[in-house]
Length: 107
Image (cartoon, one colour):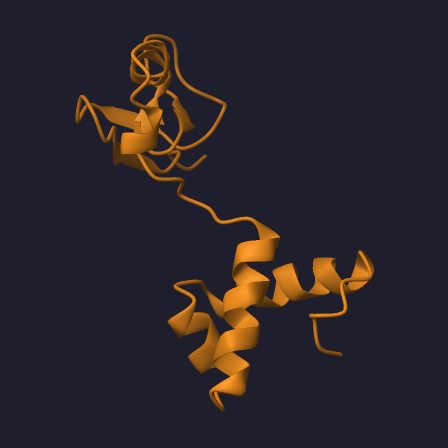
């Protein structure tokens, strides 16, 4: 069985697992690149805005997607690169937007 993806916490720099299945004594990613312990501290001190979200919501991505298409970028590879996403993530986001009836998602 493989090892869970690891990355350093944005605050304490300790290694944390990017999954919910964390070995006993390990650190788990909570949100915004922070481990669970640092997330609580940052939240209590009102400093959460100092750590940007790692993901964007559909509205933000679709707004930027429309803007790029208006500039003439049509290739999903180029669009995904400009949006700082993988092609698969872009495809899945567009598919979910179409299923939700969002008119901004092309057929």
